[in-house]
Amino acid sequence: MTFTLPQLQYGYDGLEPLMDSLTIEIHHSKHHKAYCDKLNAALEADGMEVEDLVHEVFPQTSIFPRAVITNGGQFWNHSFFWESMTPNKQEPSDALKAMLAESFGSYENFIVEFTNESLGLFGSGWVWLCINQEKQLSLVKTYNHENPLMDTVEAVSGKLTPLLVIDLWEHAYYLKHQNRRGEYIKNFIELINWHKVGDRIV
Ligand code: MN
Image (cartoon, rainbow, N blue to C red):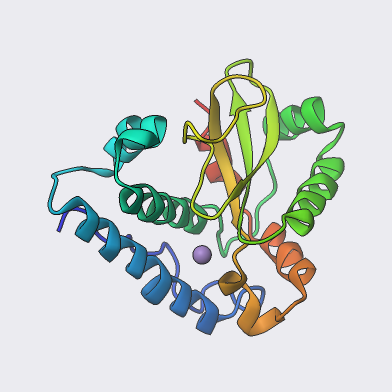
């Protein structure tokens, strides 16, 4: 097997009470694992690594089988999502807050826009905070398995590097919140790993 399910940096109950342990356990050990297994099956031991997904597969989706793109996207997106959260409450650094203010008006307004984009995403998908080569931040919606590294996702302003993502598939919140997506988004914001977001800026 080429890809393995990444370990979480916290226990299944580590994000309680903001994110419930049953949802995290099923999301990681069933959903994420299934994407991992299907990706391995689709690759047929092709010898790829995670970096190859980023540098080879996502930028040229048309030359790979559909099952590699869908399961590869979902495998990578979930790994990125788990690392976007932390049990240790954090604030953005002053430098990051200044960047958010530059692009969104203020940190507070970033929260409003992130919430509205996440509430407004129709269907299953993801909302990403990204940075471009001019160091401008923006929010990008992607649907189903897609992410901003894929050539099928139109970048608003140049090549984008993802910094943060929220999973907006119903399996991410339905057990606890049912149709109340807004509660889940609010809780996710409390859990954002801002240190990780900062580290992702290269
Ligand atoms: Mn998910």
